[in-house]
Length: 630
Image (cartoon, rainbow, N blue to C red; front, side, top):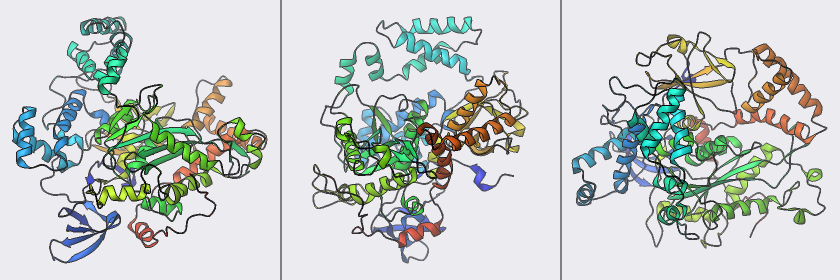
């Protein structure tokens, strides 16, 4: 039997903390009578009728008897069919205007507009609120129909290829033309062809904006769907956020040798309404799906225990799911993993038009502000050669990756959030608080729903693989993973397709010593370790370097013994060369970052959270070495 930390049931619910609402704390049920601040509420014990101050970080959603399990709320996102995705999104759009409250008359009028019965609308609202996730909107009896088979991956790839190469072009062919091309390619490749309706469903998923843009009507698409340049704004917290990456204008040094390792990348997310920074991520690697996922997860989850573990005496009272994420057109933001993970939490990604100003102004100005402040740190590269002049960036570099990471968070929480913003007239922190709790001239929206489980959010955003399970476990990138939980699935054949079943796995590229296996029967994830435990923990970046080295030597087997030997050799060579070249030192730092990432996991125990609560940040004690900015 696996230990509790190796099994995880997905929990996408969120805690709604509102006056007169019900919450659970230490196995007791309370009715919230008063919201004090971002840390505490007053709750009335429903059994004793006594009032008690409750720490928000100890609250859980009440698991009532009316909680609905339609068989989908714990499933992996890729285990949900395209048809159910459409149903889920359609229902959510129908109930979205009613989520913030509506009278019965308003609900009836809305139902009439949609052409559905008001009781149907009530049922959808109940299903969504009882589960706290869009997956609660999928009909219980819907899913894989009797005799229906999922098409194999090769057929799916052909469909997507034909759509890209033929349908989304200026020639604007008919849907039937695309169907014929798919059937022809499947016949040529000796693949069981999908049905015509399956192909039509894939085409129907293409947004009108994407279709118009790709078929030569870009101006029409921008006019119809794009926001007015320079007027992108929000009326309340988390209505719209913007996310982007930049390479920081600073040279970092190695933790051990203090030799330079180059410039890090930083990903930032900003709330348009308040200008609060909702999340961040720093890496030595160029922007990727991992960068997006880590930044979004950081933005969504509470940060108090995490700040305490990093040793930063500050507050960052931001959590919750943004309604719209405003991003650029990079391939990372358009990945299926990112799009589906955002969608299931009700977050919509809106892409900025290419080469147009005024659409990403808020995040661009934020990045400029952060980089301007970075220019005061020894080792800065400044923004250009003219600014740098004769300054020796490498010679003055002194900050390690972990020190820079802590500096960034300190700057965000103790300076940027607290300084008066030129456009707002108040600090981002004040504006955020006003948007939540209200002020003289406006009502607040209340606490954003607070995610119940940070681990679920992390798993949802991790890269996904589908693999068959063999006698030696599952193989990904030439590495075998095995656990007893896989034993009953070895070489299992799908009764419909008569082919070996493929199963869902997810893996964190920062640590490939294990992966998460999703069991469709138990609807739970299980941690599966490398079959050869003699292999050290390493990142995907390190492993790819090892494979390159073995390939140069002409090795085609990549046995675990060869991998282990190459790892030791690579590490030793990096150590030997770390004083000679920046590239080698950068490689060494990435090796060292593995431990940093493992130690950087958020604290979750109540003791740690209580310790943080007792160490309230003093706003007057800003770090003296952090300069002010305009």
